Length: 433
Image (cartoon, rainbow, N blue to C red; front, side, top):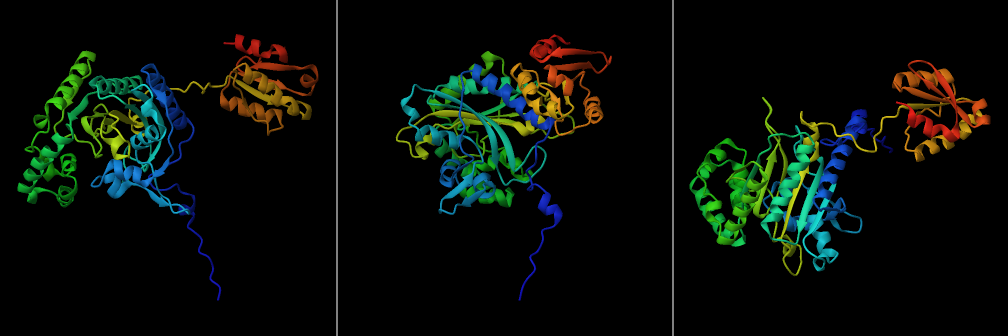
């Protein structure tokens, strides 16, 4: 008995996965333009590039991010390879950078090391405004120093990137999660507080109480939010060292004129954070719930959690590039490589077609981009495309010109034209306005 294979519905077969999308045309250049600007600013502040794999061993994230977080419990994409390795598609960039730092023995280099990176991250999240399952992130990491000036450096660099992208009136939401000892005693007191208000917490937050009580401070449930108004304040529980560190960070922000608000309920969702944590929301827009466009914090204990023999105090931040680009204030940064061609190249005849790529290569070396339709043969068809493209000049390369090593350059507005030797073409084109 034979069975006929089922054919997937056309919509399922051709659609991109839910929460993921194609980036095409002008949107692609927006992402590229943002990356170039962010990279430029990062380099000026002393950061160097690093690229880590999209796939990491799952334990890298399980160890660093921790149980009781949304990423580990609900959002991380995991897979088992044919060789039996359990891998995960990176949900964030920090753990991979720290893994690379340890693996390549970078602790023996002069510290701190400053890195920047850019690329896709993956979270099985509910798709909504500014939230995708494949998201793009620009990140900064500073590894190897516990000094408060490093915290200020990363916040300042982030602010500079966002302001150069068009943002105004940014306010940093900031808090301190203290040292390990501070956190233990604070978590104990916080747990006791929530137990007294257990009936007022949502079902999800009651589960969080068993695994990671700090996550309750970040709850979006209205009932829990009301309970959090009276929750113990972690800043008042800081030890002397953490309190001094936090004070120095705030003093540095004051010195740089960066606006901030101390948010006692800001804890960030990842368990590796210590001391400084911060978020930057998009500028307020009428009728629109503001989204967090950048966030980060200090993670002094992460190196040991990943297996390093000694601590590597560090600070990191991630910028949600999708969110930045979708805001009304983003100023469409044009990438340097994107030069709108002012010339359309037209070829007519077999000899001209064969030699066309040589002419285009000459122009490429002279940094003159052109539009072309080499697959077309008709002069009228190519002129029609040139008219539609709105380019000011066309190069016409026919049989006669191919023999004479020249081209015709036509002004598309005035219809005037000149015969120009190919050897002089790049100089001629650069003289045109």
